[in-house]
Image (cartoon, rainbow, N blue to C red):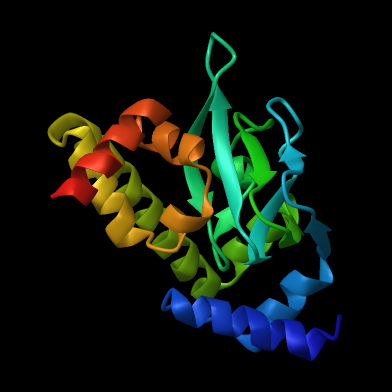
Length: 197
């Protein structure tokens, strides 16, 4: 891929999240990154794999999920273009604590975690962007906890549809249900009840 094209694409994705990267910084990140296309349904990383790369979704959709004690997968979240995935290494984990898979054919920019950390701490603008990303992640975590403590399943589903309208049509109902903390059968009942009203 042409480097100038990649810089423009990354800037476009960043602007969707109101982030402003310097061209030189993006150029350096590209230099220590790989680009890979994962077919739909591919396991990108597994629990206990070394967390040495962080991913940025350039195209497609990636799902992060846990495996519970009974072997069921429980969706933690969906990562859309411009979002960060495989991020455990950036948060201090040596190994991945969850599974990562491509929901659609997905193009990922895979950055060396150690080199990205080093670059963040030598560039004030990038450090500020990293702080903003961490704050957003914390707000999301608080929002999710609040949903499970104060909302019923129907309210959680309606919020999901509002915030992720394109996902509610393109993602497996089973995965949406586990994201909401309910069974697929409960999700079907909720959808029927909403449709009837």
